[in-house]
Image (cartoon, rainbow, N blue to C red; front, side):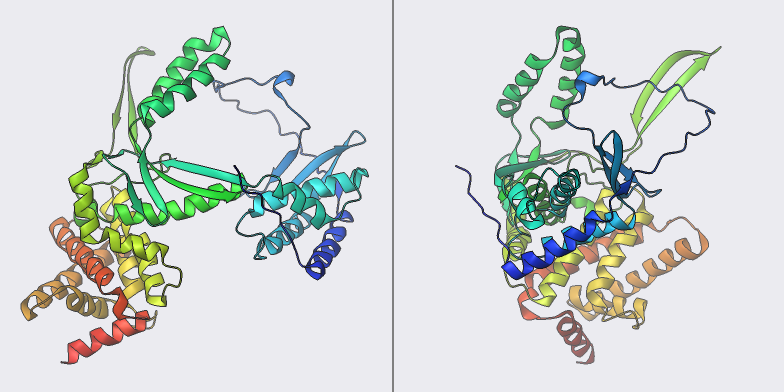
Length: 453
């Protein structure tokens, strides 16, 4: 049974929000008329679908976006004309929704997007004279009715688990054939006869992409948009923690696809052989190298947990994290993204950004010298090993400089691979020592003292 959540605001706060919302009504204006562009070159793009009047359900609401693709207005129909909030007036609505979202009673359950949607509906209805309800009364009621208990599954790309695995607030589970079969059957039964063949082919491709894959799952109480936001945020950190233990973090020759399905960077090339204007052969092939599925049998999962995954899991759910623990988590999130890319230059940018974020006090410190020495003392256990690590870091920074400042490709792959192994060991060491430091400054001070011993 879904939990019942009633949204409340302090009476004085509600009064202030209502006053600001009333000001929006005076900002409603006629929708801008888009100029008809001259008909020039019209590419022959094949439409994937055609919508008719019978496909439109409910009232049409037009949205406007600026050149960046960012929403800058919404409109509604009134007396045969289009009115709405545009540009600064729309920003005022967004600002009001954002401030309302920041209240502790609302933030856990409702997204800014939901508040904006309900807020705009209030503006429309008040402008049309269809309601005299207060802004907060209308919005809290509309949003509150959408709150429900949900179980969110976010499938991963090319990751397969033999058994369930919990990391932080996320439990990784397998998306099974038994789950997909009834879903596909319901979709197929709704398709008209003439679309059955095309629908079956589409579902076959979908099944191939998702069946058997691991999914990041979490149970939440919120309206759908907020539930999706919270699930994605929790999944991002838990997936990063899992991805941290993939071998691609220790080698520039390997690639990891452990990310939410649909966000992976998977490159393919289509090649056509043409003769006299006629296509004779068409081939598609992957442009990625070093990538593969990540299959984790039960014994491999046990090893990951013992190797530090359980420690990271506990840190993710810890309520009152220290400043150092927060910095370490953010650094690992940045660091683990390197393995999602093919290009060594891109990977090095993420690795160095993560290392510098945890081993430098601020932007005023000399970067190369401090990173080289501090990483050496985090990882190395003997003087000889620390010298090797220091020299390797210096060499990698020279490679980075040659790429950034002179456009030279990364050629020192062996040095980069050794460096990646040092960095991975360094983060593992910090995971196990995270209880020793309250802040990043404490860690750096400890390393500087060790250098002087």
